[in-house]
Image 1 (tube, one colour):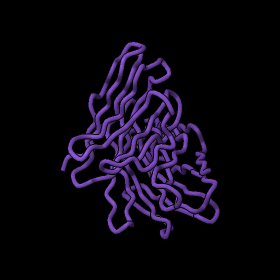
Image 2: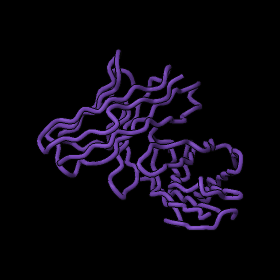
Image 3: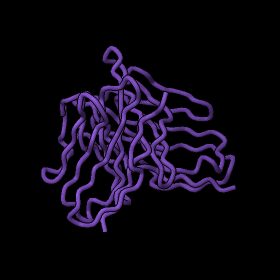
Length: 116
Length: 112
């Protein structure tokens, strides 16, 4: 059973370009979470999605950032018009609620975005 | 708003020592607490998950305890090895949401 997969692992974008980060959850998981780790800072929650629904986006910047988790395919975190401050590691996690009692989240290897 | 802190920020010990990492959280209404390990430039590896009804979990040389009422968890590492060198992160899921709130981490170096 493959773990959480993220691609690309490394992404370089120039200021003003768009960045698209992909996350494939573990098989059978229908809940996806995105976190951001800025250099020398801790991990911060960005958004929580279920299939075709955004459940909690309280950690997402109001502009330029969007996320989706379509019925088919991976979850996408999209950053438009990137700026240098967007340079960070972006981690995706997935979980499978088992009777509402299991919130263990499994993390992907991350995508390291560098904005030049 | 839940806040998680970890002490110490960094720790350097000789190989073979037993050590304790501390995690504190401000709101005791948590659903679970999870300890992770992160190697430089890598993702997160889950070490131990403690549900709110549990007091501790053990895995090999690792033991994590949870005291919800005081808002504390400790990660005990026995007989430390150089391969244990990494950043250790504590994270809680509270009863109001489903995402993790992470602490800043403890950077551990075990010297051979």
